[in-house]
Image (tube, one colour):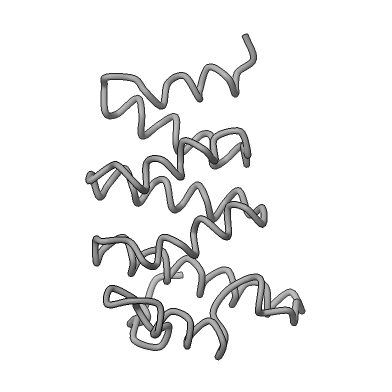
Length: 137
């Protein structure tokens, strides 16, 4: 059985730490096969730590479908999940700008996505409302 398939099976493991590790490893592998699980986890799970790892894995995968799921997470019921998803989108946009990518409409926060985030529901987070970290890297 391939390594990726074993990790996908581990996403339903009864031990929480094993599930978190599988999510992190699938993100590092950029596994698009795990996207259906990640979508389901965002809809069903209430564990913020698990959801944070799911969002990080989605950002690492970087496929158009994973970016769409990450964008959808900005409308999640949990404030912490919405904020973290918006931060990941902003971080991706900044990295892409540094590399010279100019098509912001598909990669992250821009004026149009700021409007989308602000106007998409009562739980939306505008891009500029998220504080930046200081210090560190």
